[in-house]
Length: 384
Image (cartoon, rainbow, N blue to C red; front, side, top):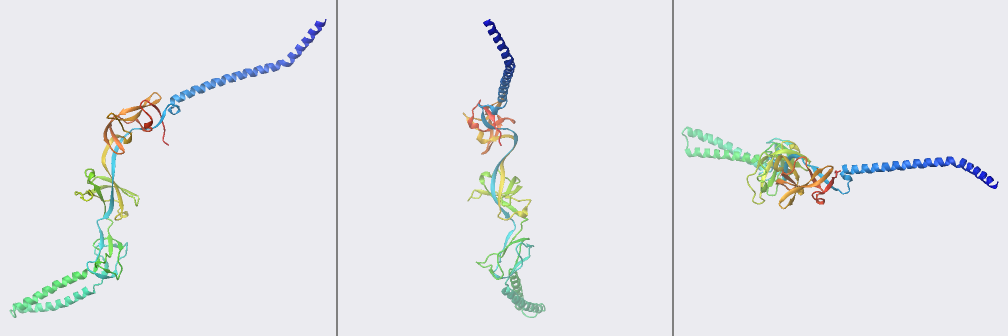
């Protein structure tokens, strides 16, 4: 009877426990199942990410830790010019100093700086009082001598008088005529005139100053800028590299002007003192902007060739007498360093012309070549 009561109590407790814990256990199972699914999805996603990373590394050399960074350029054919530079000065064919031939004081200046003058125009007047007096005296003496000569000639024509008197009168007349002509030429020297057409560049003396003496200088400078040229003294080592008619580039740094001109003349004599010869370039444009003694830098070319492959000379290496450069070869998705033998046509300080061994489109390592050897895998960096 007692055991029956215990069984009944246990049955009731089981029913109560089942009624209270059933729904909670079902919800927990669902959560665990959901978590398991998420964990599986996460694992699958990580696997996909890993697969993508591997694929990217195979396609992008910059992602590979074992590749060496270098800079490379694609080779192209083009024109090559090897320049050399000459230093010259602007000169004027018509740059004239107006200097008196006789010593005298300036009585007046007839022009001003910057004024245009024509050939023969008066620049200044000097004190010519003494010369004028001489001309006046000779003119008076010549008038008397002429009268006497004509009288003696008339008498001699009539066979009157002596021949000696006639000849003396004629000689005196002729001498005074020549003396007067000389005196007039001397008088003309007291009027300073411009020998050329141009611009008064500078007035160097004032009225009242003594000029034309041992201590006196010029009165003015007249320059014609329509006739300017550039002269350069060139080392004799370039005697075969520059010629008449050759095109050159002229740069005038003081006015930041670049001109493309042709060589007008080349000197034929080597100066024994500095071993140079003269080269002349006559500008065809912007002549009014050029000033005498202005610095000019002339760029000429001692070698010109079209459609050639050139590389920086510093990239050329030599191995047992064979010249070579480091290029890049594509192997699948990789870039591999290759030692490419080349034949040099001509070598200059900065660039080398390659005769054979390289083609347009080849990739040549330009920076980082000291860090790689043949068969290294590299990644190409882009210059910013």
